[in-house]
Image (cartoon, rainbow, N blue to C red; front, side, top):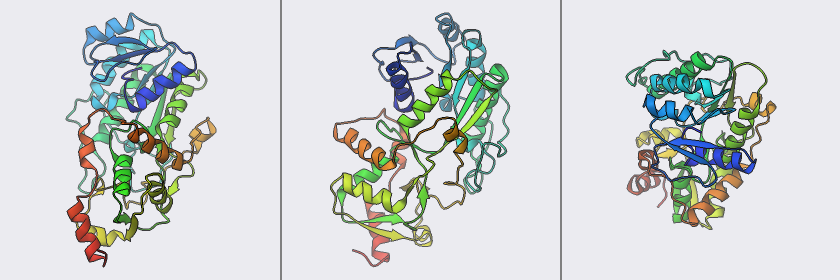
Length: 337
């Protein structure tokens, strides 16, 4: 397990340990340890550390959730040095690797962004409208790096948004905190819009399943909730689990744009691009992906927060949520006080 101490990585380790697997975690030791797992300390950009890690094998699989922090050349380095000790590699990527994200509906056959497997952190660009993203190019290069070394012995998982207990990005925690505060709250219309975030524990279970699956050639799976949840049900559930009497005020995209509300961050999970919540996950469902109702994810995340759940500190947390003064201005413009 590359990483393995927080959010998805931790959920994967916990799931594997529950199944009785022998698990080795490899990380820098900045986020604690996981009881029951063997721990190897090191830096995945350091060849000597990777060689020392490889000497602890062999393993049936490497699962990598930490590649988003590193350029493709570092992913390639790790894959090359661990290949002799690992039968296969399960690589957590992203839907951002697709050329059409977030403008068009996506399947696993949609064309990918192009990035060399040995690219450094400077490769790629972000488009004027926010797509494609440099992040997407980098992650596509990470996929290319693993494919270069592991060939058919690789599984790519391409999630959209992952929520649940332990979330460090701050999307769902912001909505829950805002719901608890009550009063009139700006929410993005239309209320019927379906969104497809997926629970971290369900992604983890599928990742471990794929680590155990020795059949077939190189595989890729989009990871998104097959049923999803409407904005109306999402907000209603946030209000219910927090015991709030808050009042949702539905604002159309044109009204939000008039106040310069940033999509994806100031109102987390809100984005108007037609493909953002049109990710086909039927291949993963056919392969065993099972997604709990998102109402359960919301409730469990609130329970985690109430139990003093504290995510690993991450700069993205501060990006999320509209400023209360700005929200008040929007509400006033909509005729609400």
